Image (cartoon, rainbow, N blue to C red; front, side):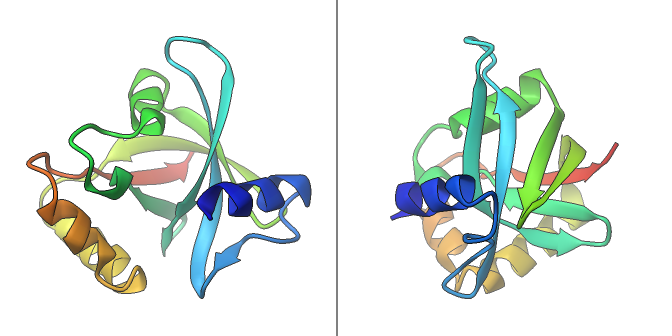
Length: 132
């Protein structure tokens, strides 16, 4: 379902797709760390001031999602929210900030991130996409 959602979001240039079942969605545009090719991922996000927060859950898989590895290699990326494209810089939240943002994201995602965390031993990263 997420693949169809992302396709619609991209094909309509954000006119459709900024919301999925009441959850806010963005398109994260990265560059592949190995391929150097453009990559796009549709992700649930949490607004936090002038930043956007995404969770690198990969459904609780034992490894991080590819987009997270792309961000660590090149943190200057772009998000699209609706029709608006915004240049951002990624960083991983830690400590109390991580806990606060995790709780907000988990609430918006109806406790699914807690389920995903229970499926893996890795600490699922909380990524802050702030203005650059």
